Amino acid sequence: MVRTIEAISEQVSGGATPTRLDSGVLDAMRRTPRHAFVPAHLQDLAYSDRPLPIGYGQTISQPYIVALMTDLLRLEPHSRALEIGTGSGYQAAVLAELGHEVFTIEIVPALADQAAKRLSDLGYDTVRAREGDGYFGWPDAAPFDGIVVTAAASHVPPPLIKQLKPGGRMVIPVGAAFMTQQLMLIEKQADGTVRTEALLPVSFVPLTSAQ
Ligand code: SAH
Image 1 (cartoon, rainbow, N blue to C red):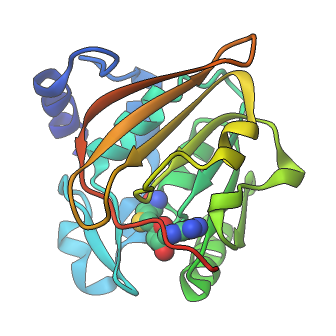
Image 2 (image 1 turned 60 degrees about the vertical axis):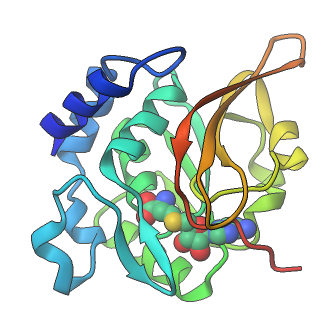
């Protein structure tokens, strides 16, 4: 799986999209048991580089995209990371494998429960998972060194920009639901100004709202 990720990286690199992903990120991907995050009937496909259904109309993301988004956060060791869209819990586990403190929010109650249990059973003690609408972030745990949004938003949620530390990065797919979106890199500068860069076309399930 990681060899495929490396091969794709070389093909799609350009701009802020790196040719070679960080070796620490690739090692974390090697250590994370993706089969434990994939439904029983799809076990054979757990280590192929493709998204897979996890129920409730949602998917576990393609491993290359998980590796790329994790790499783009450029987190220092022992950072504080926020994920919007826990889904299976896989992306949160990869961040935890890197030694970060992870906060993750899922809007579908059953998925939030399953992922919290799975992460705890697998011993990912540095992940805090809760149910809720991630559009509003996790104000009590803010600010974050990095924020990764794993569902497509029509715009970058202002609460998430607010909860990003100066010097922090956010990676988020932005665009219309059920169409191709742009993966955006948002960097909050030391002076609080925000720099935005579109990286590559991606296809995510939509960020929904509890409202
Ligand atoms: N990161 C996941 C994949 C996520 S798929 C993994 O590694 O498996 C996107 C997830 O975002 C879905 O589970 C969906 O229910 C959730 N989601 C959609 N809108 C949301 C919102 N407003 N807040 C939190 N989660 C949301």
